[in-house]
Image (tube, rainbow over all chains, first blue to last red):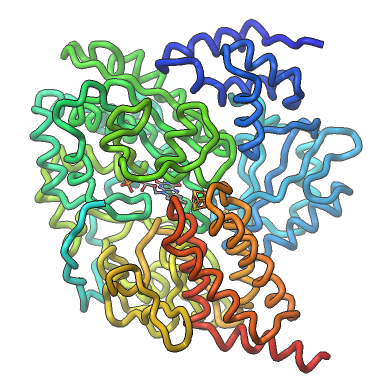
Length: 167
Length: 459
Ligand SMILES: Cc1cc2nc3c(=O)[nH]c(=O)nc-3n(C[C@H](O)[C@H](O)[C@H](O)COP(=O)(O)O)c2cc1C
Ligand code: SF4
Ligand code: FES
């Protein structure tokens, strides 16, 4: 089934095409938009980006599979990115990650049964002075301890911050 | 990069006056009002731009050269010198801000963008004028959604007010700025990978030369500078290069953002005098090591840099000192062979990104090293065999050692893999994995040996 971009996304893509000498550089933003509107980057979503920017499918596929934020498979609406890199590890980041796994009932990389929350073990998110930390869309959770995790899960279930709001 | 004579390492600067140092790039931190265009202007913002637009581009470059500003992205290369590489007859030039900040332990650029987006924009417009660059870009890391939103709004506001566009402030000068979002890849912080990513390609580094200043974005001469580097430009133009140079020691002008994380009582991000020692930083700025413990190791500027031990903490945090100060022991390839950076130059450490990570005396060093190696194995772009295969092996073998399943020969194995990567790859990610591996083996060998012995006992 062929997919389409919303009128708003088409406008954004057209505006971005003005900012570069060719359409190719817009592929990253177009992939972000396609993922926002279609949940993940299926083959059809890649075809949509390729057709919109007049790029070969193989090129779009190559870009989509290089970067970790692009998803080829469906996942939860909201992604919790929990850092376990050095500064976070030194202050208990792995314990907080384990607590997220327990409270969400999924392993890292997994999505909750209700398809709402997706848990990712992240590399450094540039908030190391407040380690351990996590980021969800535009919101940072800083200086985390395992006993804060259930509260965060409840908060996100009630009021998600879909990362896709920012493109 | 250009050859430079070995500079004198500033020494004996173990105490500096922290309170007396002016705040430049962090002056607007915690000031919600100054994040808006109106608030920024009220606090003096964009006044320097007016001054700069009346200056000749070459005079701005001369001030930057005189300022001794050195790149804050990791390599510490002199900014004015780099700008000078752009060919005089270039038809189109681009300025690209590297806002990909993802070196573990580093968290300053994100704060700088969040608190003072217009300072970055003002710095970029002035720099673009100096470089005669019309189409310019900020490459921001994909995960930084909050900061992207802040920056995108600030750029829109700057266009609306005439600071950006075809004819800025009626001067006839054309400067455009576009914020480009990444999508998750540490390697896109490397400047040529970043340029490929900006062009809509996979973020894989290019072979150098040609350097971006000669042939970069869309084939045109391109200057890539870090966020903090560009945010210092308005101060240099406002107060003059010599004023800026005098703030710092030796050949390092200005102040420096340092991010301290790990086992200290008060982790944080501070703008500090260049040349403060690690000891003064930890004890006086960060309230000492937590839980009444002692320092075991300090990562001086992001995990790519060889670590320091407790006997090396009096060294000033300054680019040349970290490379040349003889109080820092050289990194070894084996207990008897020093690592050679080429031409007999020794590897001690480097100032890197300003991300200082403190490890206390109860830290499991092999486990910390495994986590660092896991990061590099995950982030290798896969183009060069030594890096792709080597980082994978460093992760596997260091994990085995960390888990207490290592063999005595594993330490030689780790060293030989690291040595095989270093200097043999397209970009510096290979070195970034190899150097800390060898550095930890050099200075904390006993910790690895103890882990391996434990296994002997259990068996
Ligand atoms: C693997 C790797 C990652 C890097 N990541 C960053 C980064 O996130 N931010 C940055 O400013 N520079 C990074 N750099 C350094 C850039 O290649 C480049 O030297 C720098 O952006 C130049 O700016 P400066 O001269 O203002 O420091 C990285 C280098 C390497 C090899
Ligand atoms: S050194 Fe590693 S990251 Fe750099 S180009 Fe080679 S494989 Fe890619
Ligand atoms: S190491 Fe976790 S945010 Fe940097």
